Length: 337
Length: 151
Image (tube, rainbow over all chains, first blue to last red; front, side, top):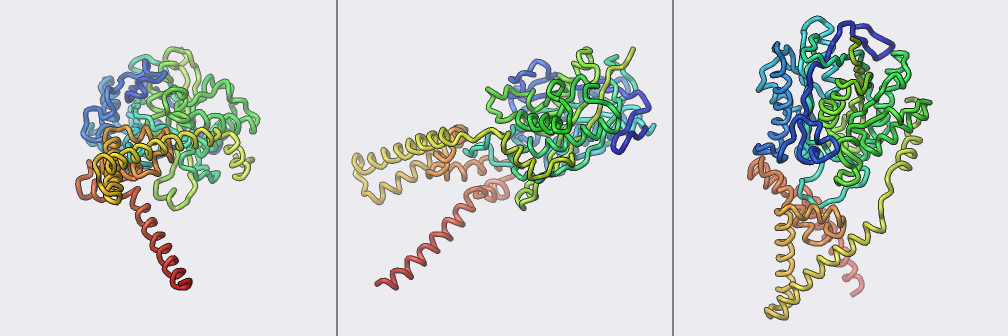
């Protein structure tokens, strides 16, 4: 691994995202990306007794799918989720029995997991590992907000937690000949511009995403147009506007190449999801289906992925703290044949 | 990201934020809130005029009926949709109070009858009860003093 600039690390080995699997809930299944997911749950309990168990089931199914598609047994499992003490991921690890590193960067957990496994492969320690992240609307509501049946109102700039999971197998072997390689990654810094409105995650997270993009470009000496697509995790519609505006102020035109998973996953006009999707499962469920397919099909040659996370807790926000945020970047390219 | 101050950023995101539709929200709250009160009035009329119950008891029966309806609609998963549409219109009447007690009770059933249902039941309504009682005590005390001075 070669360090570039301050926060970016370039891979020396050829590391592939060899396979992915995405599962989504019924509402996500009805959205514009419904046809892309590998599996859509018929009901949001996934046949389990509680929403926490349902979330775990989503995670397990996705992880199990990418393990089974591998000829050799992966040597490491790394992932995260939003529930306290990342129980969805850790309980999945209990079932699959692989060596496990739990990570937490809120909704950017998938990015951190990719960086962790890529580092482990670069070190020569392992040849292949699994990454995942998951979230569930109902378990997140329960932990962070109000009971589901409570008749309150939220503002139009609030976001809807995605019910979904994504898992990927990262390996030095490209068993399916998909040709998607991890080029380099940029570890994000925690940014806090003192946004304290917990309904305004897009505004809280946009500066973190912008900071990581600017650092990535400065570290690698690339321009933004080097990438065909720059994908943020869950800024949603209104946070995306802020992302584009902040980059414009830094002299970079991002509108044409920028997409946001939170804005893509729902029909924000008609699905009653306020500004769009959020949650630890938002980026991975879109990345492991729609975005990965675009790379495999060659519709996108180079992609910069920026899962974004808000590192608050209910305790910190009740004590009047603002929302610290982070974005971890990794860049993907199609292998040159 | 050092070239924008926190204050400048606040101005930017508040300006970009979708505007709250104050007049439509008020109208919705007014209509739904009014409708809930009209239904309650209808029950009150039935209790007093048809069933011949006295005014004081009829008022209690009306409250009980409305609380029951609020709880029932919460259990059927309808009250949150009404709440999302009407905002304060369905939050302020006594049906909203029922909703705020029943919704956490339903939600936390998985954590058991003691640490779930019973412990979490007043998680939303609790503060309302505490400060409602406290403020009525303060008002009562002031009323008592004022009466003592004036009479």
